[in-house]
Length: 206
Image (cartoon, rainbow, N blue to C red):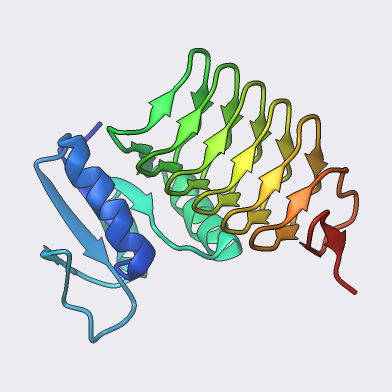
């Protein structure tokens, strides 16, 4: 761990990420990178350059990619990893993390999250405010679990999927990679095809 943190992305998601980092109280200084020239300050934290400038900071900063879009976040994080960047993990102090939970680099766990035992969270994931993930889940890389989503036991979520706000995933369900689960949807059977799933029970949108 380094004593400086650099957050790539200073908009809405970046602000919440910075709030988590501040509450962790682990870094002496925090700064943003963002590609919008109009943003000079966010959360009272200075924007010191553009996202491509991250490569110039890999030797003396921990880095976190705070980009909400799963595919873009994956591209940026993997480019930084290839250059040897120290990609940190952020966990809000008010999150509840069970025993034998593994959380990979570049993932943020927001306030009010509960992750129960024996679950694995991949790299570059967003586990958003007040969501719950029960026992023995497997959340693959670059997944976004939105605020208030609830996953029962033994759920698998494939890489790059997005679970909408307030969605519910029943136990023993597998969601294939690249799926979008709509807000408030209730998934009671496996989603074997990539696509958008909405409704109660959730069905693939034509």
